Length: 256
Image (cartoon, rainbow, N blue to C red; front, side, top):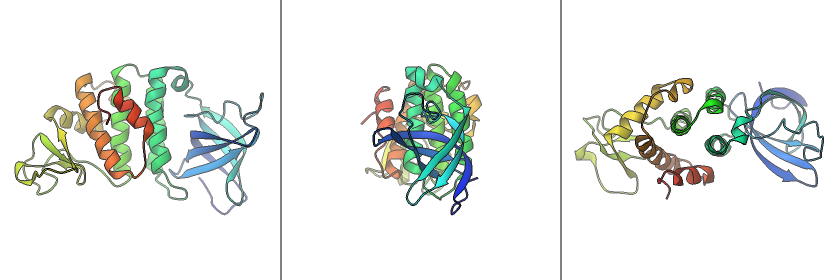
């Protein structure tokens, strides 16, 4: 666990993003095991033969020793727990994993823990390591649903999100996070279109374990509709540009 205020401390973390610093260093953004964000300098990481080479690549899970500085942590040591190299070597997996990393980069906060988020991310990346085709798309949608729920925006897909009455397909309130009945439907920028099939798929994905998501057998068209709806929900509530999600959604005709 991360212990703030200590000169040095150990943590397990997932590398999300790297930024060049000076001639040879990197600033690495991590999701720590308590779900908080950590930004740390990996000195000399860009030098040929650096001991950090490969250990702070995106999606890598590492056990680290961090030294607390005045502004940023410094990585003193890092040992690989899971490399997830398939997520960097395969284009489709890389695109899917980039959505996960970008989302976490935007929603995780320094010194603000959400311990479930780390386990969710590890399970998602493990599943993406071996997933193929539409299973990757299903994993992206499921991760975004569960990630939003862990940040206080849990969508529901049963009763009307406004009055609790019987709801059907057609209108989904982005603000309330659920379908609306005919009486509660009003045109507006916070209402997205939702099919019965997409709502049913989202209900399945929310309930499933990440290791089981790829086997649900949801069709590609329905997953595409589900991604479009979830993307609208995420964009509505996350006040930051999610470039990776926009690019990923555009590949399935749900960008905008």
